[in-house]
Length: 117
Image (cartoon, rainbow, N blue to C red; front, side, top):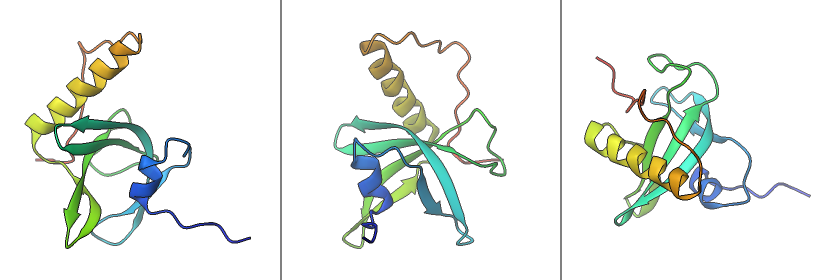
């Protein structure tokens, strides 16, 4: 029986999914990500994704924030480059962990919006 194709967004939204998410970069190369969390804020849903393999400009302990956004009537994952939004997403994520009773040390936060100078 053939596997059912799920879009990356369907995979993210499937709470039973344990597989990594595969996206394509600007050079149309496949990049695999581990899903860390989905974070709803106001009327948007953000995904915290950690690259499985080395990505230029991204440290091993860094994750990227994407937003599920509608482009041309189709849901798409778009990388968030606004540091204020990235910080807000991580703050909400850490609060979600604390609410679940998970001790979170945020004194040495190292997040990345994907934007490198």
